[in-house]
Amino acid sequence: MSKQLDWDSIDGIVLDAVGTLIKPTPSVADAYAEAAARQGVELAAGDVRARFRAAFGDDSIQGDRGIYSTDEEVERRRWRAIVAGVLPEVPDPDGAFDELWDHFGRPEAWRCFPDAAPAVEAILEAGLRVRIGSNFDSRLRGVIAGLPELAPIADDPVISSEVGFRKPHRSFFGAVVDRFDLPPERILSVGDDLENDVLGARRAGVRALYLDRGGELPGGVESVPDLLALIEGRAGTLKFGGRV
Image: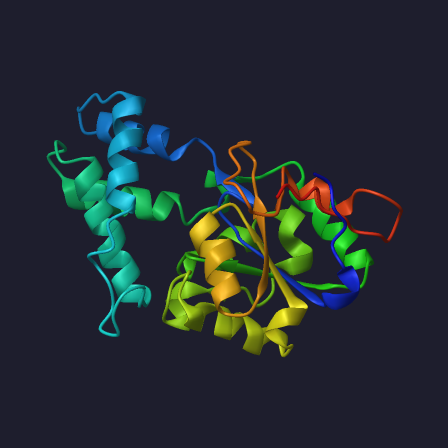
């Protein structure tokens, strides 16, 4: 079902980073498998992918303020545990961690989705304010600074390790609201994670739209199949293909 969003009620958009604007290239599974291979351990990418999914979903490592709390040191500990969980066979786990930590902090390890740049350009031309808001650490600043497509919105991203809480925590979206200096209902969150980018945002009073790149929309959730769907229609008129 196609539906027009009331853009007169939106002044700012916060775009998720990983899975929304950018993706790792080579894939996470390939990068981890290659790191293991350099230590003489051969692993199938499918096995690595399954291990990563399980390790990434483990929230046992958190800051001292409870679930979803974080900072730079917590993120480093969390990713060290993820690498250990994905590559338990490697003889030098610290070396594997250091290699992968550095790898994913380089812009060369990431690519923008093809729809990212034209969507950002059109949104800005429509007079809306845009920020990146991501569950990441300070490495994200170097990543987005090295991707020319994101230059118009590279300044002052909202990063979980700096906020002190990861999405979907209300405090993350509170930081988004503070950074925009807008009422929460005047802000739209767009991202590819239903809980983090959509439901968490809505619980904080922020409008939200699910980026359904895989075509696996949960029922009752307004969505777009890609970022270009935000700019469909007449010039200066932004729409979304909401399926409810």
